[in-house]
Image (tube, rainbow, N blue to C red; front, side, top):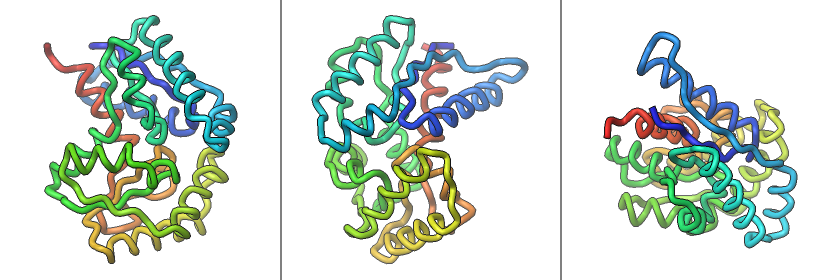
Length: 232
């Protein structure tokens, strides 16, 4: 089994889910007392959020590169960035390390392709929904049409993430508001919806809607286990 490097803390709420899913999946695959070999580097999310809010992506990129290199130097065999938004600087990180970066959008794209879905909605932070780093990868690599909510809905989705979910606050009113956004995406032709922020699966679950939901936290963690257990 290879060692999975986790770059987390963005927020720690979802990073804890990664750790649980990795270990549960390894146990299910190997049985007995098996658990995942992993290393975690967890940042202070208050510092990350302040840089995001100010638009200082250059500093954020350098911070992420340094953390990734620390994981590599500590013995990680691959890297998982435990957040969708910070894949914005995935190319710069990949160029700065020698171990493979397992991209979260690829995990989502593979799952969507397996369902033969061609049009998907995307929920996430404003940075993820409005930037091209995530949507473009899905469009070009997996030939998907990616729909995003309207501006007011994007504001709602983003606000709930930063004001509630990263603090571990789960509110029924916010769940219902998200489901309205999901319904709107479906009415525009979405055959499924990507939960493109690693905190969203704590709020919205598949049982809440008949539309297929793609939980990027779980998909990313399970893809990492596939990689770590693959026979080379």
